[in-house]
Length: 306
Image 1 (spheres, rainbow, N blue to C red):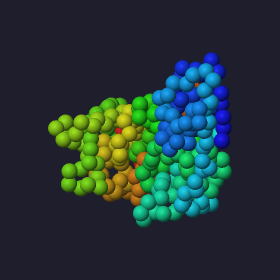
Image 2 (image 1 turned 180 degrees about the vertical axis):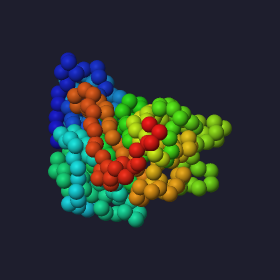
Image 3 (image 1 turned 30 degrees about the vertical axis):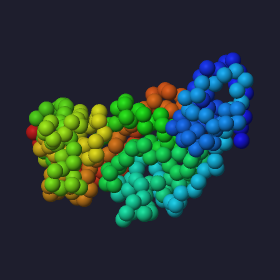
């Protein structure tokens, strides 16, 4: 149990705002503690919006973290950066991010639970703070929060679309334009519900925006850099298929045979940038290509018309 006597400096501010400056937990977590009556003002429960006065006694207790039923596993983990707030990893292709039906172990979360010893708690539990995901067969840079404050800050940036997300994609064919924007309405496929689709404005009010740039052209393929402004499910895969250039190895959208030996989509999260939750400074991280992607690029025949 912690106790504070309100001074003039902290008077006339909301209870939840005051506590956010005292405890290393998010405002959402504080509001939950207040709702659960774990916070008292002058020995009585108070609302989050309660304005504090000089001489008020504020007491609160943060319950010990609860363990969750995820098995830590000693799996290979390519760590790009780590500090007390975040960890940035280069996710391997073929690795599922979070345990779910059909994939209860062998996931990125199982690996994180083994390798990271200083999670300070996410929403009252000991668990990784997954703030975004990559598809199973997509490789590359991912950021994970290690505490409430970091998770809240990162989730807000994803919501505000201020996170820089840059991918590399190897696609079929040669593009007419060396750069361009793909902007569509987007949503669940009306028939094949496991798929996403470009939809008409009448059927969806959700926009998806991708910007591409050709990095290299080959005889039958092209390597693109794709920056996404929105983060819709399968967005890059759907958008590139929509313009007639599906990703090499794609198994769900615009599936085509390839002579490169690719058996999964050649899509890699190359770079991610965001404001660090603690310092507020812009940080950027780049993930090297996995071995199979490099080998596939090596199998591409040079563009004879170049």
